[in-house]
Image 1 (cartoon, rainbow, N blue to C red):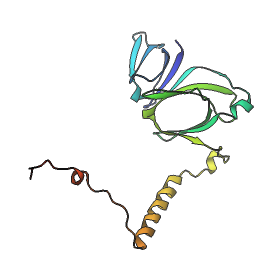
Image 2: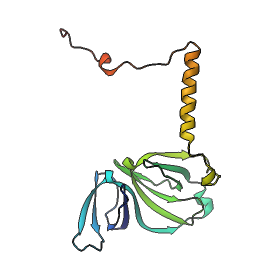
Image 3: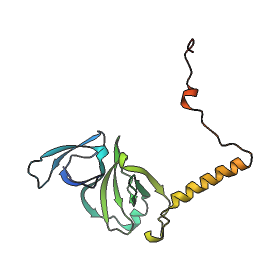
Image 4: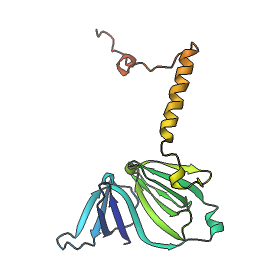
Amino acid sequence: MPVVVINFIDGEVVLADAPEITFDLAILDAELRSINQNSERALFPVSAIRQILVGDPEPAPPEAEVATWDRAAFHFIDGPVLRASIRSDAHLGRYGGVWRIVEPGSTEMRTIALPYAALKGVYQIRQWDSRPASERDEHSELDQLARVLAERERTLAGGGTVPTMRPLLSRMRRPPGSA
């Protein structure tokens, strides 16, 4: 059983031994490696986990090999983004995925296991954003919202209509003979 570091959504961290992580079940069974001698084993709901580091880091493959891997941005529900090159042997289970990654500029390859509940999405990207983090636009989502609203206003001003959805109840068919 590999040693794993489980990082929970609330910030708690646990060191444990766990069988191969496949995310086929909504729970993770683990033997705890804790200072607290009263805890031996635990079942953790996958929805409570933010990230799992699996095993020890390994040296990264040669840069030429890593350059052939897909680039991805893992956007977490709580805001942070993890950018990494990912190997093609990822395992995507029912409740989460396991990826072998190399972060830009790193000399280590790590295996991470991420429940889908902790992610907004995993985006395949064409190239790394070369700007330092301090120069990146942290409010770009507001710019996107403004663009969408401006497009809506242009549509309305031009005499067009914004498509609307009928309320759910009006789309339901009533059984024959009902009032």
